Image (cartoon, rainbow, N blue to C red; front, top):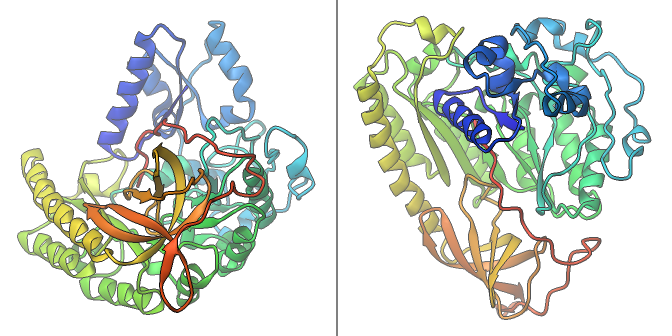
Amino acid sequence: MVNTCGFIQAAKQESIDELLSAAESGAKVAAVGCLAERYGNELADALPEAQILSFDDYGDIAARLDDVLNGRPKAPHTPRDRRTLLPLSPAGRAAPAAGTGPSAARTAPSAPGIAPSGAGTGDLPAGVAPPSGPRTMRRRLSHGVVAPLKIASGCDRRCSFCAIPAFRGAYLSRRPHELLAEAEWLAGEGVRELFLVSENSTSYGKDLGNLRLLEEVLPLLAAAPGIERVRISYLQPAELRPGLIEAIAGTPGVAPYFDLSFQHASGPLLRAMRRFGDRKRFLELIDRIRTVSPEAGIRSNFIVGFPGETAEDLHELELFLSSARLDAIGVFGYSDEDGTEAASLPGKLDEAAVARRVEEVADLAEELMAQRGADRIGETVEVLIEERLGDGLFEGRAAHQAPEVDGATTVHASTGLVPGQLVRATVVSSDGVDLVATATVPSGPGGATELPAARPPSGSGGPTELSAARPLADRH
């Protein structure tokens, strides 16, 4: 079963390559995820090696996989605009539903039991799931100390380059009690860091009538027994309220980490993208964050080569990057996406020109990230230990380092640490975004001493090996 991505050309190609590789092994292959949902019967015609499944199959996924294994073909779905499955008004999506309370979330001992809720689904046709699938039971496939926790699905924004809303559907928040129940279950499975994920986390709660709901839920998730750290992904700069900045930066147990979707820094080009902001406004936002939390981690992704991008636009982006001191920077070349406004815009750059610009900005980004990493030498960071590398050597991530994308921290300690343990360490060197640190604990006004013998986190049952599996690229 290959979980595919349908966001940009590179990720789509990676998904197809994984499907073909799986088929070459002789296994029966099922394609799920965004690419499968977005292209449906078209993908099935082009890729007969795999059975193509829809989000609507998720509620009965075991039976669908049995069909695949036993050679019972299922007619692939015809793609549709999933935004039409929910009311246009966010308030109309919040219909109450049975079976979603905390008690329902504890019905299965081996899974979190987030039962199919139908919450916010209105009057969907029989057998049709909410935009990104029903509230199905969850079972972890690895035993790492970090796990994603989906807080919402879908997106109501209309960025001109993005097709995600059409195949992920309208924005739909999960209710707080579902999140808390799943967080408690994950903690019981040895998870120590929750990574809150959605297409747009700053919109959480708007369809439930409370735009400040994320600020209220964060302390509750951070206080879940066994959870050491909560991290939030994908924040829209235009929606980042002062109260949310303070909640992220100031709530104990919440990582002061800001994954900001800037996409560019040229005002005119951002307008063409149907987005907001410019270099001046974005730098002011970063200044507000660092006023509250000077050592906060900030990352972003940027699109280079968008139709109509001039040399002046590119220079504006480079000026922004040089001033922003971001911890992590992703650079992507623009590619036309089916059904998007940008695909029909004039001023297209050829592939070679886009590639040159990507290389130019990526080279600058590498240099700036290395400088930012060097700036952290001497800082005291809190590192969540994820695996043991050897005697006295451990790997984990500091608060400004998200899983998979933002580098890691190697910790030297003369005493045994275990996965899931949160330790304080002093950064002694850097290599790009990766850091090297020495574990310490406060010893009073006189400074710090070496970390004493560690014990496993409560409820962990001892060391847990971090899964070596890496997901397909789905970072938007």
